[in-house]
Length: 245
Image (tube, rainbow, N blue to C red):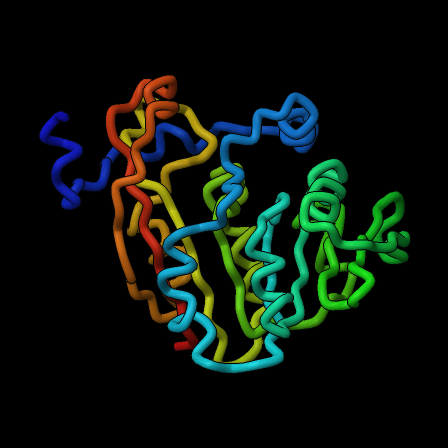
């Protein structure tokens, strides 16, 4: 194991903007689902979320929880099973259908009136609604505001040039006294083009700092054998809790 991976005190890369012009189209993301190139999906759920769940929920009940770029995240069922109302957005209809199938949930689908050509999928229990559309079209659907946002695999997947627009959408969806849990990745961006993209602390502060208090809850080594194919030899995940300023 190299020295770089034994230390959690990885320095931020001054040349992180090397990825700033990288663009993936919505069609390319949809194709990842068709070809099953979804290494970002975690079948057992996110371990840091499990660990910090009490901090995130604060013992409150009946919360509205938003999952941006939700994929088929199993955590959506965790929250629904605890009595919370879950809303997600995902560009891949295949990903949404797989979620309901794999979680053994019956569902209905209906067009989103405000966004022609798109659909919303709703669990029969009524507490999970997944919108199949672009995150940037979502505000037109008037989905209301949320107590919690779980942002994992979302900010890090957004094209770097769209981050400000993305964060504006996220902030517009928050209620007072919100809790926003954000997971980002730290690696050498000169060795991997992304996605997932490298998002440094300075960028998080720039994007959220005017509206949110930022607290890094934990930083963990998440390097796996598959990451070698990215050309990197370490990767860390950081979990931030964002609260109302």
